[in-house]
Image 1 (cartoon, rainbow, N blue to C red):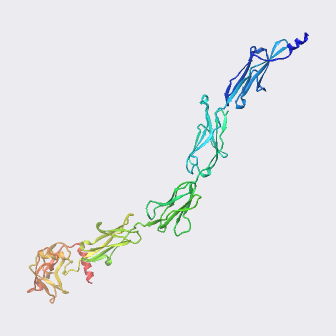
Image 2 (image 1 turned 30 degrees about the horizontal axis):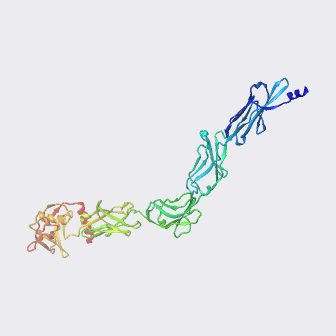
Image 3 (image 1 turned 45 degrees about the vertical axis):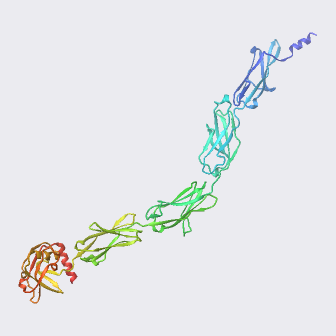
Length: 511
């Protein structure tokens, strides 16, 4: 009878009492550190302490169990047991009440959305990785990563949005995103979303030229610009000239516009051009553009219609200015001693003429200028000599052609002039008609030996000049009635280099 109560005292017992207590939060968030502590009224009497979750033993260090990175699976009922010394060799087992821990979701798995939903090539696309933090953890910082296929587009991005500036058909595929805390304690991925990038077929193919005109100047640079009104993706551009099979050039690029440069334009480049464009949905051709090559004027050639560039007073001389290769229309200007004479146009190219009724003052240098709007060019200088008609008067046997016995011509015969009334007014007219200088003297004709032949007639008895006439024939005259060669009239005039050349020229014309 005495042994049985003693055995009851020595047997271990497990009771739930307030002597042993458990301390832990009743909820936590994913990624949190959770500390579970057990303690008794007198911890020195605790011989062994164990922790349990849902009845399963948990490894613990002394009086603390730590969940370093909480997960929803850590939710459950927690308690601990302690074996304590009661008396001598008598132990007692204490058990705490159960404490329930709920591990809440820090944020749900993100959802990947795209704007726009069905992008077209070349457009920008925004990827959004959307999730939500609880109100009491709104300050938690998240990092975002974006993926396509097996490639990382952006990693540890502080924004839930990722902007793709241009997207192409080759970029079609599965996309997803990942959101995680800065410490990487919580990380979640979205489901994969397939993005189909739409390609727009090319249309509205247009060929233009730069400079933007239908005529280009020989030697300039010509740029052929091929463009499409619509079309996305990599487009293959090709340039062609009508009448030829081969391509002038090709380019493949992600653009609605491409250029082909012809560095130096030649005459052979004139013709009709077109371009084609194809982005995989079929080749589209532009309308043809006509390219005309204009040739600037070169140095024109000036010619005279008279042989040897020598004319007589009263002649009509044709001045011909010509540039055979310049593109029309061409405007020609004519100059005498750098003074403009006039101009004429050649609307269909070639040369142009300017007619001039010449006098002695038209002797001198001439030039012409050609201009077709691409710059003016002037010819080399040409010299035209103009002499008066062989005069009907001459001074014979003097030291020069402006001094001697006065003789006039009538019906092919030369005769003398009587000195009756012969004065300086008469000599002035003779000097003017011969192209000499001013009148100086009225000497007797018989001073210029040899004297006239006896059978040579005397044609004028008296010349009644007032001194302003151009020729002696313009003066009033009295026909011969009584005059011999001993009364022949003479004249002395000043001499100039121009009159000296004119007299030689007239002599040549007579010969």
